[in-house]
Image (cartoon, rainbow, N blue to C red; front, side):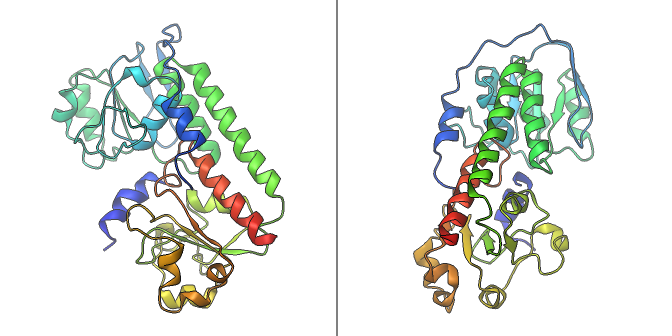
Length: 312
């Protein structure tokens, strides 16, 4: 059975401190929503279409990624409650509600006119909330960067901030493309290991996170000939990692588990790794690479800096 943290992180995925992108989200001006585009039909990828008759004024978000995007498009003033895992921005109205096991009664207590969740596989939540006249918008984890950009635009449409959503998608895409272009071919021929926790859970190239590394031409040691194995989240062994000897190690367990370049170097045998000897153990912000938000730019920047340094 996967550790508890896996169940919290994996659905949110698919890095550095909360720098420029986080600041953009928290400081994004809360522009007045435009009601002229309503009613609007929303067609999220991999989820049921939803029609909003009016601009929502009381939004409950049970998806940490969507919470960030809501604020980034300027709809923060419309958000009345978020789930316990929505830690960014800091001023979001956090509650003890769970996005993994949402309680319709708890949600209804906030009198929302729109509820956003990451999944509702059996449709029970949507059915329960529909009885109160509240629409449920399901926004699954994007499967690609293009899907992420499309979600930015959709959140803008859903909240009356269509222009802001389109601008956010365009700006994020441009920043990522520039980082990749500036790195050029620096990543080709280099291998990496992405660590989700100290028990060596990792990601393959088929995951959202893995696709970011693919932009730089890096080789993922976790693929092991079958990137689709274990749902894209295999648990490696220390022996496998040491044998693969990755050129770069990316740690996405710095906050949850206190991992850093020093702790990695102290692991038995790890001081022989190329990444350790060449000072290529890169400490990431735990959730920056697991949430489809504008902060993904920070993760891409960390990868770009790592491959550029390793190739120098």
